[in-house]
Length: 60
Image (tube, rainbow, N blue to C red):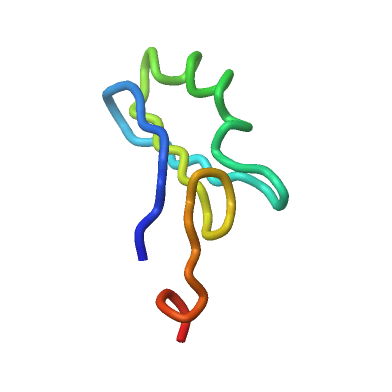
């Protein structure tokens, strides 16, 4: 399974996971601030945002 994601900054990594009905864009403002000191990684969970989800391929 592949995930689309946003990544910015260097240093210790912070992984940001969106809530239901959102995608990684919900973290845009936080990424801008946190990436000055940290490596930020915000993923799009299956069937959210830019993530394409193929039920037969990814689950079955």
